Image (tube, rainbow, N blue to C red; front, side, top):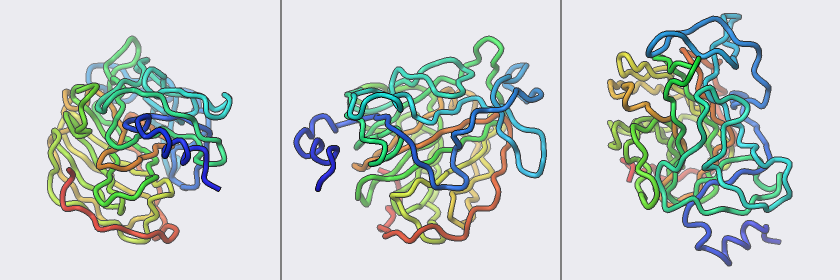
Length: 308
């Protein structure tokens, strides 16, 4: 029997021209952004001005000092609400950690149309980006929080569609193009994940170099954690990993400047549906433990040579 979400998508396609949906939760990735509440604040870390963030931590491997979590969102805004209630990601605040203190804004897309929540057993808790849409959160210093120079970004991304050109975006925006901007790469610097597991660097809205293919078995339906670190002093990117892949991601860049990283962003494009089941931005360099050599077997599609 078709799901309620599938029936609604068939009957009401106009509602699916864009969007961001929140629902109940499921994670199977060992390196996924976790649901645990953050421990007590750690010692200070570097910033673009002076002092560092002071709430939420992420335990580093090997017993080293934890790093301050700047933003952590498990996309559970409506986890206790009735099924199928409409809600937008835009306008909500990250939970459980939001040191900058802002709310998610529309970065690109056709609007912030509400979407029906799926039942917790159908898709889990997630932010849902349909066709071409992305959301962003300001990282501007605010009160005791000062934007760090070195940050590590992690996101749990999966796909709920079948598009040879579909991709998810995880990175930063210099400015927000806003409503009726169908190009999710406008003002974007960061990494994109294609529906076949390939990863590509994007600088100021343009692909930089060729995608790196997934080594192992990639299942686009299962959330996979994409992680990397940036340094806004040098503009560099490092510490890149995608759960389940043994590929070497040796991207080089000088584009991650303070201006280019004004907002942290997540979304999807290329005519597919991208799910984000967790996002975390941490001050400093956070190195994840080695990822498994393979993930559950999944069908692959041919990767495009460049993003749309």
